Image (cartoon, rainbow over the protein chains, first blue to last red):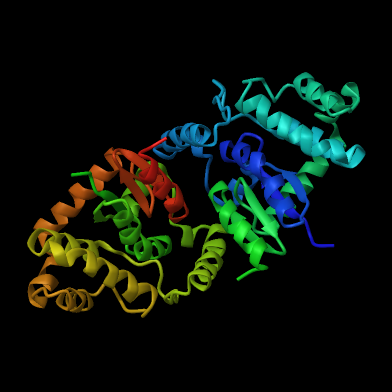
Length: 200
Length: 200
């Protein structure tokens, strides 16, 4: 068995939305699974001293323009919500609760959260919204809503985030395959090439 | 006449070195010239609050690994100098002096500075080194050396940098074509596609 492609991202990252549309097909072309790993970019920012694109002068304007043209180019929907970026702790906690209890539902839930924020403009900080998205993947909604604020899921998320930063993961999207890191949506072609050649 | 592809970069930027190897051929495929525009990323950082990759935890390690594998992948030389990043004011001033007085020599000089730093490990903060690189492009070396510290070239560089930031330019490499911005070496394929289609 070959190792999966690790896909690290923050649910509030525009480039993660675009990467999530492509990563499964890309990995499948090379016989790889995808390990979806939402985390909190804010924890990585504490290590790098960076801050979010949308809150950075010049870069924020560029990113908004870039996301719009990516959507046009790809022919996919995209509508930056009025409230953006948003806190993604609750979405991450529900994700990891699914990941432990109903793992096949977790990637679909993650795609659902990204679509809810970047297409439908829904409030993905709301436990009920998250529970509804989990229910669509076959999970019991009341338990999913509880996970959004559960102490054990808070602890799990802290471990996930600290572990990511310890491994040098700092962006969104950020991919790791066979210990090789690739940062950014625009690195998907390089990741594809790396998988095709077995490295270079 | 179509507008040139503007190529903004800092002489101390690893990704600019790689972009400089590709940009002329890319633009030529679409009947475009390249307008080489070195500037000081530090001035953009004052606007964005960002700092250089090499001095940023996690990102610096990633960039060093990334540059090495890009060089392997492209089959081009690359050797990060012991002293990096370096101040690039003097190199920029000599560039703009050439740009005004011997414009055909300026792009070759810029390529020479990037090669001197990223291949040969030479001190591109030194006016005599810069004068030697200018001389290789047919410029009188004594006048080039004087330009490295000339008040009028300091003023010209300030205007170039302030003008870039006013236009929303903040990275290296950063391309502008027909008012459309593209940030990063890894956006060259998108820039190529944009030129081929006339936008999207």
